[in-house]
Image (cartoon, rainbow, N blue to C red; front, side, top):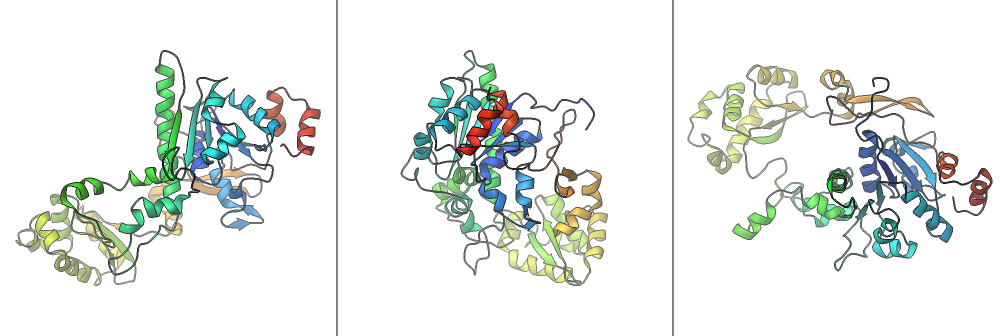
Length: 400
């Protein structure tokens, strides 16, 4: 980063009072572009500090998700803790929570109470099922959203049961949608006549449901209930993973007629371009099994490198299936600095995925990994006017 270059969200203060992943990652995305993110944890610590793989007793997940944040501790369940949180919220542009509605009411940290002294405040309420409706008080996490959003039902192979993702898909989808919604709300506030904020109702299931395409209209108009198709889709052919002679895998996607014709040329079957069975996408959908067998049979006769070279020559779309080791060592990814070396208090430096997307004038950056529990208590509570003696007393009373 150039010295003295201002990050695009510099001056925006975000209070991350959420736990685990969806809410915290939302705050992370804002912090990557310069927002001043204060991470508020219970004195016992966010459960994420003990999640995932550990090295020397340190959670690697925490180092990723809590990058660029200033951790403080605070017990919301105490009247003094609630008072301090209100004072902190008065200094903020955004507050992020992920507790159930009745819990927020019990702690008096609702949008109504927080915005009374800070009318421009944006409050993001991440939850399993939203602020109203029959399920509003149900506990909800990403796994439940992956089931109820319709994702698991269409994920997997036709002859097997539904499949959940092996990573936190719903949480990351929620974080992205939440970051987008937060910036919309900030833009509206800053361009409105009264400068008032609002709250954002962000249930996890809605974020993932919104990414499942045209299923509702197809059901409404055609009565179609999509099933599992493995690596195929119901709207374009060819599209699949194929095993090579050397036991590796390649992905092909023929999303337009010119691309499909290049694929046919790459596998030495230019005749398929004019074959009535495969000449159009609709015909390819009708004869998908036959076409997939032709392509898969050809793939098994060559190594991955041989196939890639041939497809690149014909400008046909293809990609190898990567492991994380492949990602870290890929020359294109390294040229684009998709992997960052980030300073870390315990390990000196760690690699993690860099900030994306890249802004041409004001790109984001990762300044440090997740910090120690309560490491900003003295600084931030001092800014609220507390003396060192008062801060020490709060520690002894279990409030911070």
